Image 1 (tube, rainbow, N blue to C red):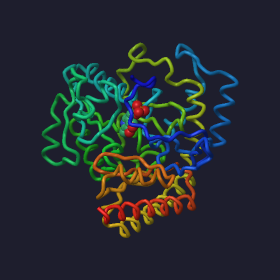
Image 2: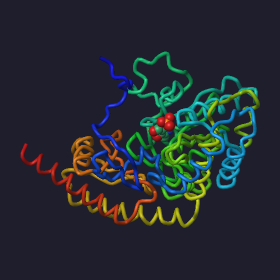
Image 3: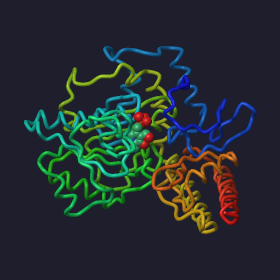
Image 4: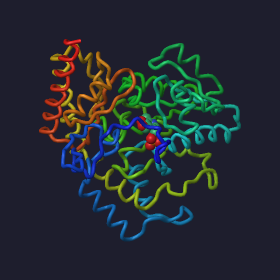
Length: 397
Ligand SMILES: Cc1ncc(COP(=O)(O)O)c(C=O)c1O
């Protein structure tokens, strides 16, 4: 019999009753160290007092208001994002996949309104993940995500990850509306695009007129030690950027940020969302942004990221049969495994450590940005024990 919850997830037999910072607590009181953070969502950990206060204060005033009216909380968050980024304007969504939908629509409408209605193609890269909507799965294009869901939204050109030079240049013809890329692939196995690659994409877009869209749903909001990951690459700002996950700190919130020019086709009536920019979400999002965008906060993320990376390099060196390498940026790190990555995740569960598998046999480490040095040390000792147990198992096989 089908379960009451549609079984589209392979769920671990773990349930939690509450959260405190980097910890999730089961009904029997067992504490789990959370190095998944809802897959890069709980940027400030669980039950952060400032977020609880922002949410409850807003809940006592006003929950929902149609976008037919002015929403001051939405304007406040949009103003702050515009002030801190390349963007001139922001549309709020409820998730990353909705941000993908709008990014695709915006790029196509831009060229339509410029008298080039055939300029509809969006170039994407293998290993990408842009969400589970029809546009999201067509954008990623992998068999795993698209199988059985045809006919797919047309107009996506899939290139191999890391492609550059003439192969890339030749793919950008007069019908390419935009290039869509994650500055650091998350689901694809924590694969950063080095700064020169982002700069090369920016140059190529400048030469051809194509729009550059970044998907910073997973790598944005302080995760890599800058407010947005592309900021590590000077002069490589996008025209359009998808955001979600961390911006809501656990409350459903997404956004599409854009330059005035890229957004020029999106006039009244061209797009909408009942809940997008909801006062509750925006009140929480503004509080997350006020904290994460502080230079001292980001300095701390970078310091702790350095510590975590150094400790992980040591772990890989101590367990060469289990791990191959550490990769990623900031607090978006991956352990490329030699054994099956899900075995490492399971061995972590057994030691009350939560990590997340990704493609390319990688285990993702995405702790809350508020993690402490002691919690990093604790996670490493649990990972070390997990690796030792797996090595023992290998040895006896
Ligand atoms: C890079 C990226 N884009 C888009 C999405 C889709 O976001 P959501 O699950 O909020 O729809 C995700 C989710 O994992 C993501 O990592």
